[in-house]
Image (cartoon, rainbow, N blue to C red; front, top):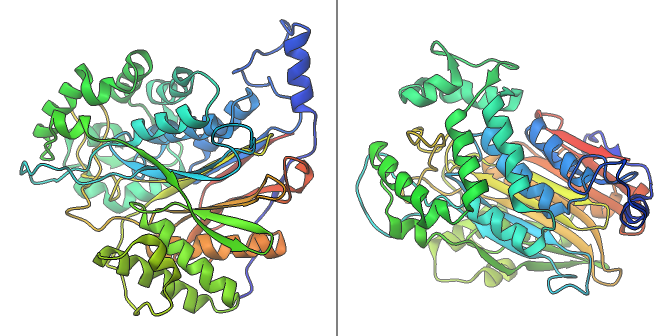
Length: 470
């Protein structure tokens, strides 16, 4: 397939690290401090997201001297205010993270940070079964492992968007139009996402004071309060009112995980995908191995991605065996929920690419009273999405090469595999096969070392944004 090139947003070379060092050594009281936009001059890296405001938040963090993980954390929380149809405190996701500094404990090899919304262990009835809300703990885990700026400042950005309002984006309005009828049966959702029962249109302000209060509590009391403190008690009480009852034991046991990635070799590089419970990474790895054998046969690679996910979901086999299997029977998946992807690359070559979901557009469709966020739909009642991301790096150069996040239901995994194969072989992104969509970060000359070779792209068929500087 000949792809239609996406617009590649190139960032010019600069002296960000040197300028930051000068500010540290020689004062710098007259300029921005670390954590403030403009602290880094020149090349800052970049951010990509399906929702523009979240990408701008990521760029602001990078401009303030934050790592890729800092930017991704701020973007994840921002999406809870700007794209609650696909990402929120009640949902979760998965990230692939890479630290270019081999000297650090987690440097040199990508890792997966998994906070997929899982089914509850207990069965408490209810007409809207809810998943365990793992977004906040997952982002906290990512920050603890790879972040540098204070965590509370990264939450503040989302809190401000919720408290003072954010213009409804085209991406959000599209989602809202699909489900506004049943969603507005919930009075709180109707109040926030409509004007007198008419769905918000693009550009209209979306103000979420209760969500702002919840984010403020997380900022002040810490993430733990949402899972085993006073706010956890409020979540339990509110969940009973909306038909997706959770328990304190459910919340206390909702823990993210860090695990080694599934790794596939490609020429002098290696490509990492998150392992289950995110089987979208497994599906992308299976598709990529097929493309390594025959880059032209996209149909076979797409079929292999679905067959791999279906085989794993059937049980009785581990992820690595699925990726390496040569005799996967053809299989299809049921209709899958929506997801969204976002990522960041900093000036030092550290990178994070994430996929997030609510298990269904707007999750269970019911807002937690007094807390301002929706619970994700339980995978026990709906099939889980393919949360697909991948990241390529050079072990020899100890440098970042490319990262891709894929969405588009059943097309998410082949989108990741196709885009990675294209940028690794040609240096330029492509238009991935429908229904897939891709967000891309790529440095054909590797980073650190060649800032001018770096570019960022979102899918032209959607309404995302690449936000760079330098």
